Length: 384
Ligand SMILES: NC(=O)c1ccc[n+]([C@@H]2O[C@H](COP(=O)([O-])OP(=O)(O)OC[C@H]3O[C@@H](n4cnc5c(N)ncnc54)[C@H](O)[C@@H]3O)[C@@H](O)[C@H]2O)c1
Image: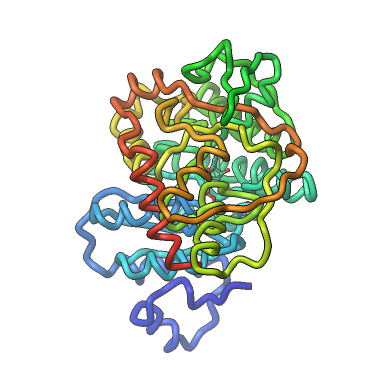
């Protein structure tokens, strides 16, 4: 269980120490917020980030602080590395932190009722396909029920809020209805060589695909039926600073860690890969993700109620084997790995066709894969 001290800086928590009366837990948020509001704020926009201590959430949170806006972070810190991101975020400025769980209606409802955010970036989620298969109930509760709790709270207490959601390419299933050419280093989809657009049929595979897909559809439907200002971003592979990758999630960061361990002589045994390594993803650097979310706010009236495939595009795509080659070149190491079976529902290729996002947001990925990988290596050196 996370200590309540995480909610405040030391100075902010002082009034609490002097309290001589008992405050019911339900009212604590309210009182805490009033204390916090005494601090003069230069901003006029309130941002709530669920999952704000995760990889993408913490990068977005840092940008909110950089812009001088008012920040509220909601995260139960269940993810490996999230506490470290919280500490890092504390060095960037002042904000209110709620160490709460999106699965609990009361937790999220109280926050929405209290702060009425102008913008919500909804990133709290169960993020690993493997975990979703091992524990589908957990996956359902976090991704579906958690998202539903958020949407319903917004509908009730803050219907003007803008909500941007991080969905996934997994809503399109394994894409095996298409044919693939196999080259020396990668697969190429014959029908969509430049990437998949949003006309691809939704086809939820795996509990993770189902839970993210259901949440994705709830977001769109809460615009359709209740008029909420929701936007869905269907992400593929994102990478960059603050990504505490594991074997199960964040493959670019994970293999960068493995390559750095090799370079530093810290590797214990060859690492493993699932499949033959020719699976392709387009890489989107976190700086581009941050840029996209803020552009989303600017054009909300045009973007609301829509889903967008977003990624680095075909020019920033890599297969695992191509990533290994790049890492070997940059770090001057020879990587050794053992091959396992393909993962369940693994797509041979996912590259986003971003034309719709390009046109609505006037946005495109600006970070080239080579410079992004070098940036990620530099960040990963701090954790290996
Ligand atoms: N990283 C990617 O490549 C990628 C690709 C597609 C979609 N996404 C989606 O983007 C979102 C953010 O991804 P990320 O890579 O930053 O993940 P992350 O795991 O780094 O961040 C998620 C955060 O949510 C928090 N969280 C989890 N369960 C919670 C709960 N019950 N209540 C409150 N907080 C909870 C975690 O502690 C963590 O800090 C996720 O929803 C994920 O499904 C990510």
